[in-house]
Image (cartoon, rainbow over all chains, first blue to last red; front, side):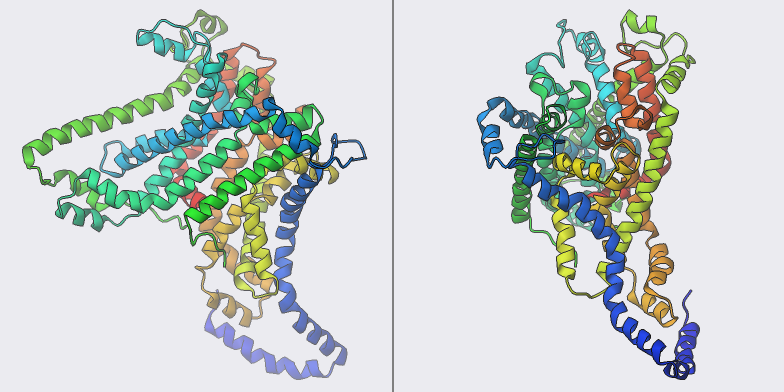
Length: 322
Length: 302
């Protein structure tokens, strides 16, 4: 599309049109102006829309969020009263508002299980396996499914006398569990849905990392008499450490921001309410935008701390953009 | 980063024939036990993954009496019973939902590609003052999970007059995708600047270079962004739920969510609705497997 000939033609063109420009003083001035301004302006022309979106939908909300968190605003009335840190003290003093942190521990525990399973399956499928692509597909596909559909699938699955009860009965146990109604079980049930849903992504990421380890290394290891465990310990584990660390941090911050599955399946009833469900309910059902903002700020700060720990523990060159 | 095919490691094929340090006999017995365990665990995992889906699929073909009768894993009497799908499709307003989702999908994916590639082009190909600040702004934004700021984002959307329109999710999906910028930035670095310079000598403006040189060469990165973004938009529940409460503005997710009320305990209809939502994903997955794996691998790590 761009060859040397046309470049030469462009170079050739300039002197031919040059003198004509000089005779027109106004045009000349304008041209000098644009010549001076355009190189400076051009990147901003490309950045204008992206930056406008970035500022409108990320920075303005964050700044407003912090501002709202110090007011008692209800979300629609024109006046917002500055009440200082009252929202924050309320948040930390009312134990029922703090319970949501406890709920996220279930999801954190689940995400550890999820990572372990993903690592196991990624390792065994990185070796020669029959029906490898089929297994890979089955393990990954849940990740692509619509969250509401997953919610319904598991509402049905966990129903009293539903699929799970039938399976449990097939193994000889006759007890009938309220998988979602029993407060001791509900969070475990919901957290296991999250394992079911997200394990595939971790698995595919780990598999990709394992497969990017050069094959010669395995051959060399085998010549040295390394068995599978040695290969895992000394080749695979170091090779996937960065992605493992990243996934762990994402899983932890993700378990603080759980929303879809519990909201769809139990509506966040009783003990299954998560941080995000509580915030949404405070803001949009109880019109406590100030308190909800304070709670969102706490969540934001927590996630920033976790990310900061990750950056400190796993310095990565992937972070810098230029 | 690129969508190159992943090939199997040659070592993987060779390893089973190799003889370890423990001698052939012990090795083969251990090997047999290991490989039995391996396949047993794979099959067990597959059952866990597929059983909940199978139950929904079976139920979608049953009539209400069969569902009430009990065993959710029994086969439907009439495997060609499509009545539930008709009910779910028409009473669930799935056609409208499909239109709304397609609308949001097309605009937000196209917008994400344009915005992401423009930002990446400006950041990678130009030297300008405040460049560090701009880059830092995009970086900081990746740290803020959008789910935490919705309380305040809601007010912004409301003040812009976008609330309860299809443009609210479009604007939000376009404005909050920093990952796309990363992917484009990674890719644009691999495009030689000599191409830009040649086009510039040719008299092409920056906009023209972006449109005719850079954008076509970004095609593999665009494919990645389209896949990752497309799946995210199709599956998103949170944004349309918060910003488009009107009945006629339901997307695939929110329309399916509304099955919960009117269909009450009619699990055959709810199942059919869920199957209707899952099938397009399954088809896309089967046809674009390789692109999807690569897309998610590069989308998550870059």
